[in-house]
Length: 263
Ligand code: PGA
Image (cartoon, rainbow, N blue to C red; front, side, top):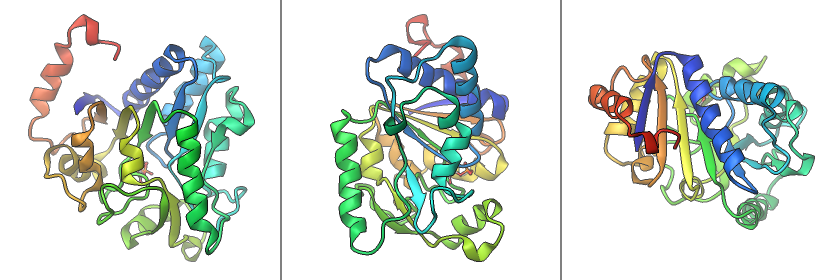
């Protein structure tokens, strides 16, 4: 796991976008795993800028989103489908059917087969080249809440009280916040060839410390990234503030050999 500590939120967004841009330009059929929430908005803003000003081409890119609330129509302003359209999809040249967000409108017994199909679609696309992740204040990745199996696949999950509270800001009425979601599993996420987890702000410091330096445990789902062969954790100073080995990570980053610099 490579830990990159940058000054502030903007730097985190730029660094993640730069890495994603590299994957897009270096592969013939790039496949991205995308995240929603407050963490990736700066990354998407920078990707849109790179598309508009530098010609970053999304026409060969396929994307799969991590998760979606069950019961929210795609046009609902708090749905992740709506989030992705307004933050990225509507502003770059992705082909319409190449950008997939799990449906929040599947119900009952359809859900299981829908999740299997989602996994199959990712496999058919050749697997995910780069998965972008945020982290919940409880250590979740996607909507894999603490206690989730570390080998889980795409499935329905129940949100914790804490996650519903964290996400209440996106809803006008707290009663509207769904209890159920569809999320890629931790096993699904771990199959991505590269993972970039981003976080900023003091509220994420404890989760980052647990994920990077704590034991690998279902109590902090993000801790499984310690087992991934190519995972980067890009954080600002505030989110890094509880890391015991921060000085070491900074030294490693500052002394990276030239041949590793754009990886
Ligand atoms: P946030 O959420 O980016 O809105 O903080 C991250 C997450 O829940 O994974």
